[in-house]
Amino acid sequence: MNGSSFSELFKPMDIANRTTRNRIVLAPMSVCYGDEAGMVTRPEIEHYARRAEGGAGVIITENFAVSAAGRQMPRQTIVEDRRSLPGLRDLASEIRQKGALAIVQIVHAGRYAGPWHEYEKRRRLAPSAVPFELSADRIVTPHEMTSGEIEESIDAFGSAAELCEEAGFDGVDIHGGQGFLISSFLSPRMNQRTDEWGGGYENRLRFPLAVVREVVRRTSAGFLVGWHMMSDELAPGGWSIKDSLRLVPHLTAERIAFIVPTPATFETLRMPANLGLYGKRMYSVSDAAAVKAVSDVPVIANGRLGDPYDAERVLNEGVADAIGLARPLFVDPDWPTKVAAGNIPGIRHCPCDPPTCLRTQLTGALCDHWPNPVIEQGYLGYGM
Ligand SMILES: Cc1cc2nc3c(=O)[nH]c(=O)nc-3n(C[C@H](O)[C@H](O)[C@H](O)COP(=O)(O)O)c2cc1C
Image (cartoon, rainbow, N blue to C red; front, side, top):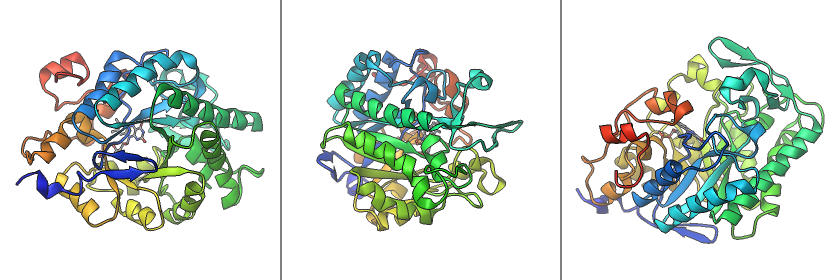
């Protein structure tokens, strides 16, 4: 079997005014190799550039916080002011030199803002003060945002996108999922406001769309703006896939250039009906297919698509335009090169559920399936 069996994966793809070399996208995955001040580090640059070197057509970084207040992890990168620019410039340039589009995922962690060890001390922001289960033994209540805090957060997204463009990135991926700030405005469970920012469907869209408009307003027409979508909250009374399908035309009317649908939030993943979801093969392909049916911009399917035959089939059946791989490219950045060469047995896979990378995220993610010297180094960069 050779790489020609995977012809769909290696077709170029147009995203707005850019063309990718193939349809393999590094899906955002928090590896937390930044420093405590939120600056980009050398291991972080090598981590991402190495995935580009391995052949991915698009690199979407892990979520970078748009402000210190919106940060979740102690070593999460922050894009808040011009101090970030030198590191961001090197990151963008090394990814692009290796032939991939470079995109930063931007987030405000909202009620998950921490970092964890300071969690009790921080003012956790959400549309409404609805208690939720943060972890097995911990119910916490976030703070209902003032209109001033809402405006500040919108501005922070715009400013972060502006900095990313100045640093030389091709675009940003606005994180509208996983229960972070933007998705909490969409959800009728999390957003119980009675002012213009909550209530009916249109009001719950107001904050997310204001973020998109601000990002669009502050970046040039050629800058890609993507949407990481909470396709379905997977909870009774929550945001549904039908709600997502109604959202799509609102997004594309605002220059959204690609969509990455992903179901569930950290909270709903803990519900008995959803346990183990992120371990299931191709778990978000049906949502991606539904979104693609109503979207005129590329849709990236992700979630346990590391078997190249599955990935090729998804593209061949036309249910998505590209494939997002997070853990598969973490464990083996050469997945694209190996698939192109037909070296399927040579691919290193991620069989972990739950994966080690989640457990080691707070201090810098590691993979049990890396060769020993890589584990000792603490990240898989150049020459490995
Ligand atoms: C350790 C870890 C960190 C993640 N961090 C992010 C993130 O920063 N942003 C995001 O949108 N998704 C994140 N995800 C979800 C991935 O993008 C992806 O949707 C999920 O892992 C399923 O794809 P995979 O099977 O290819 O890994 C993360 C997943 C893992 C395992």
